[in-house]
Image 1 (spheres, rainbow, N blue to C red):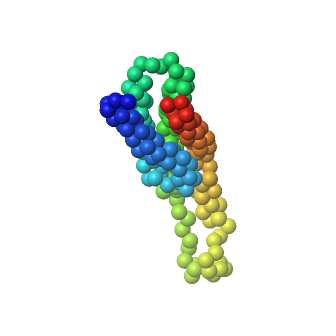
Image 2 (image 1 turned 135 degrees about the vertical axis):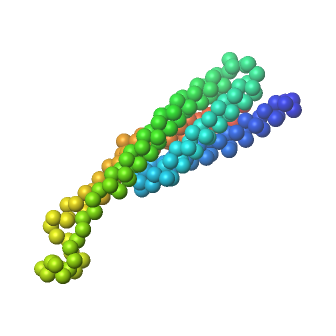
Image 3 (image 1 turned 90 degrees about the vertical axis):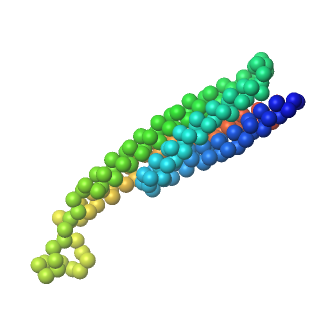
Length: 181
């Protein structure tokens, strides 16, 4: 193996470590923060997915340089095909993250705009117990919180499934590289 091949191999492995690790962590942790309705973290994870997703192209291009045009080997063809499938799935993950950020922002805006029921002072309502709510206030107070688990539920499930599949694809490609390289 020549010095230039060793440098390409070093770059290939370095790109794989420093891009696939954070990418997988970002995509797999997104459903948790959607469930918590933390729009700031979900937006950050979306941006992380975009940046490291583009960085994964470096892995593919350096791998093509290492192959030196000898693409007739089955393990190389399978690895490249799986890599392209993973990139397509990452595009779907990125789309769902973007949609989840939008849905969380809309839900936060609606919650902020919802009227807060005002309790009359205790002196005006002698029959009401301390800290209790009247019957008219109870449905209004439960309104915004009632649908807390329903926001971006479809996207959350799709993100969990797709990120797991993408992580599995990275492991299959790693096995192909180790045993056939």
